[in-house]
Amino acid sequence: MNKRHTLFFAIILMVIAGCTSAPTRDIQVDAEADPKANFNGYKTYAWLGSAGIVNDPYGQWEPPAFDADAEIKYLIDRELRKRGMSESSAAPDLFVAFAAGIDMNALELKVDPGTNMDILTNVPKGALLVMLVDGDSGFVIWVGAATADVQERPDTQTVKKRLDYAVTKLLKKLPK
Image (cartoon, rainbow, N blue to C red; front, top):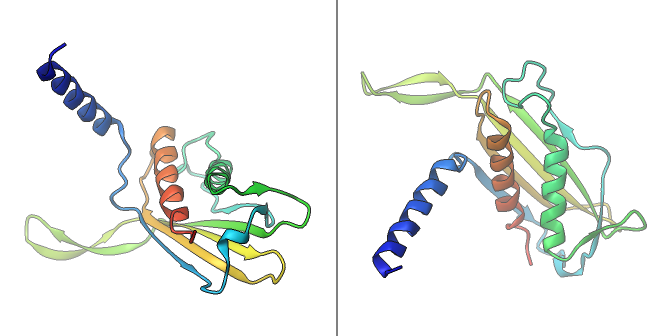
């Protein structure tokens, strides 16, 4: 195959990959860390209590039969393991907790294309908060938050991709 064909197929693959990815532009992440904490010293963690997420009985943002709690926990576990940490129930260095919240009635000013004026529009918002607590002192040493527009009635793959993006970006903000 010549270089021209290879380039053509590479471009086609990028276009196809771009078409199948979930929208993530609206996802914002931020984090704060205790400047005195030695993050390299943390090797083990345990989950603090049970995961918390807002119930969605009408299926407005969480697809039916999809367990967002389990998915978020899985993603956080994966990212902590990438950092060389392991889960331990015996005297862990860190405790991990997360909570998610949804505000289906959030309002935001948006420009109306017809009148070019700001109008108040319903834009449902969601947030994911992850906290790391020092196992010895009990102090919170790191807090990360991801916020996004809620995609109403999304399919399972879209939700998984958006959560993966948010958790991955969030935990990249964890100091090394």
